[in-house]
Amino acid sequence: MPFTDRREAGRRLAQRLAAYRGGDVVVLALPRGGVPVAFEVARVLRAPLDVLVVRKLGLPYQPELALGAIGEGGVRVLNREVVQMARLTGEEIAAVEDTERIELQRRAERFRAGRPRVPLRGRTALIVDDGVATGSTARAACLLARAQGAARVVFAVPVGAPDALIALGEDADKVVWLEAPSWFHAVGQWYRDFQQTSDQEVTELLHRATPAETPAAEPRDSDVEVMVGSLRLAGHLTVPEGAVGFVVFAHGSGSSRHSPRNREVAAALNQARLGTLLFDLLTAPEELDRARVFDVELLAYRLTEVTRWVSEQPGTAGLPVGYFGASTGAAAALWAAADPRVDARAVVCRGGRPDLARDRLPLVHAPTLLIVGGRDATVLELNRQAQEAIAGECELAVVPGATHLFAEPGTLDEVSARARDWFISHLTAVPSA
Image (cartoon, rainbow, N blue to C red):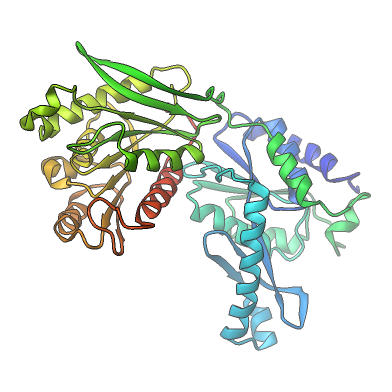
């Protein structure tokens, strides 16, 4: 039976997918035609909606025939039979891919309008399109969702070619469809209204879509005081609208919550819908005591207490937490991440001194990113040793030309971008159980 239009097809498809309501699901639309369908699915399931931007790779002399597809994150899927039949060289394929990647990037930026991708790590990616013909784009989408950390991939469409739907079972954990006619010729023949979906309609539907299943925190940007025992620790709390995670900063010796470098990094995280708390680990009199400045165990204890405070505040309760530590503060962040009383989901260290938490490193299981300047030779070696000692996932990122304070032009921008991507990749909007 033909569908009236994509929205009607989406409502019918949502009925078939009702079992996914209330689960840890992100609905991912293949733009542009898949967005109206996915919008209805996300609305019924009350799940967050995002797009997976994928581009078909057409033959140079016959663009409508797909030789494969590409997606965000460098994913590429090739149809080996078409490539062999067309006798294409690697240079010819690369030329087509280069052109399509430019358009892929343009569309991703246009559709999201500055919004970050909805995190997929550990979640079910429910990919939706308006139909499947050859399946090359759908295959790339499934691989892309897995590359972004999805624990399970489900592909759902109103209609598709039987062979393509069956083949998709190799890339998706489950394939759901309403119609799979043996006389399938084209997706459009199964819609009475199959007008092209515009870029504007895509951005509008994404903006109107049901937000993540937890209520969005009210925007907040204010100075706070956190009680740790009898001490009052001063801090600055920022919670952007619709925050998907939260990052607590631990600054190094001689620095404070007013550190321009940490504030710059925090601003980049805020733009990506990550809340931040910059606070002073020590009171003003304590900062004059060098023994306390390097008492990593004390600093880590206060960091864990502040983390527990964050987890109880209106607007931040339930948000997954990560740590950003600089210099000696990095040691405190790693020490705290090893503490079973807190659930640190990710750690980023900038120019850190992980050696000050050496005995705790084998207990750190949170995914950790160590960022070090290429010209900070001593600290770079300390971080290489720490990378080997940390129990969980750990990456070492070297910023060329940067010294310990990342004062060189552009180096702190790279720190901010790497930290943002790491936290977005490892923090999700789902509350801890």
